[in-house]
Image (cartoon, rainbow, N blue to C red; front, side):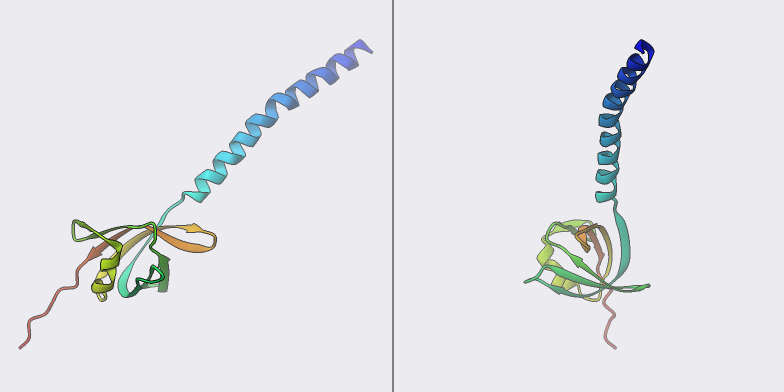
Length: 119
């Protein structure tokens, strides 16, 4: 009988100590997935300053990004996100994460379109 009680206490103790570690591991995995980033490159089709939405034509199709939280660079110069409207036709590399089912841009690197000389 004493052996059974001792075994039961040991089992309860092991579960009590293991549960917080398991919960912490699960929380860590959720944080890791929430902060995973991806990158898409393509040509800027449009930018809506009112809704902060950027449309990029990528090789796999048109992509849409929320830019409210993005940092933007044109060439190597940091600029305001509102300047994206004047960069239509330029190449962009957009780093983003998924948040509530939407692509949220965190960084946008723009290479200005080259202007061809008129003949």
